Length: 123
Image (cartoon, rainbow, N blue to C red; front, side):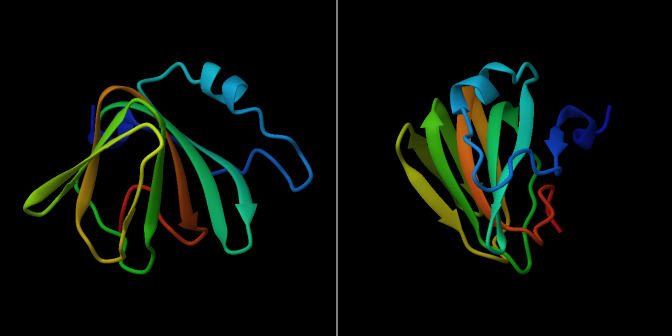
């Protein structure tokens, strides 16, 4: 199994403007260890919800910043030379061009905001 087979990344936007997004319901329906769901578009950005446990591969985004907001759990963002440790209600932005990987030692729920042009698996 390749690294990419471990991840469930859904690029199809699930909610349109003027629709309520029930986060509890979306989170409860996530049964896999690594799910990334595109919730909605806001201007040139996509709002995604990630329900994750385990680690992602090292990657970078050449042209887009990536914003992470931890809703619940613990998120580690490895950068070259250091690790950012986040818990619920903390946020962090990885600037474009910076190599990074995310890890979650326990089931963790993260809200991501990214330009719609981003490749979620990295460039």
